[in-house]
Image 1 (tube, rainbow, N blue to C red):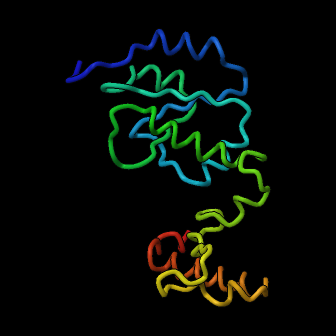
Image 2 (image 1 turned 90 degrees about the vertical axis):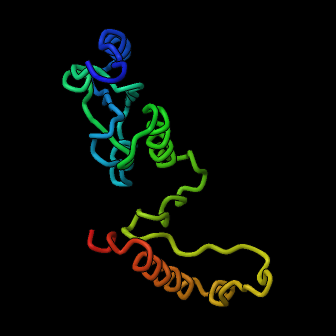
Length: 168
C-alpha cells in the first residue's frame, strides 16, 4: 500500500477485453510514459482502434501496466489529478489529423511541429490596427515571396522560442 487509492485491475481488464480487437492499441496515460509529441500523434492517427486507460487517485494496479496496456503516454513532466485531461489532449491532437476533421485537406501542412519548425506569424484584417500593420509582403499577392517570408519567419520564431527543435 501507499498514501492513496489504486484502481483495481478487474474492472479495467473486463472493460478492455469486452471491446478489444486484434489491432487495438491500449494506451495508459501515466507520468512515466513516453512523452507525447506530434510524431506520436501522426502515428496514432493511422491506427484503427485506440483505447485510453486513465488512472485516478494514485494510479492503476501495476498488472494493468504490465499485461493490459500496449503503450504508456505522458503529456509532460507534471502531475494531474487523473488521466482524463491528458487523454483528451492526446485525442484532440490525433483527431485533427484524421482526413476531413478540419475541413481543408492542407490545414495541418504548415502547423507548428509538422516540419520541425514553429508556425510563422498569422495576420488578419484590419491591415492597420493601432499603428501595428500587417507585413506588406503578405498583401503583395506574390505567393512565392509570401512562402519565403513565412519560412524565414518560422525559422526565426523557432530559433528564438524553441531552438531545441532545430537539432531534431
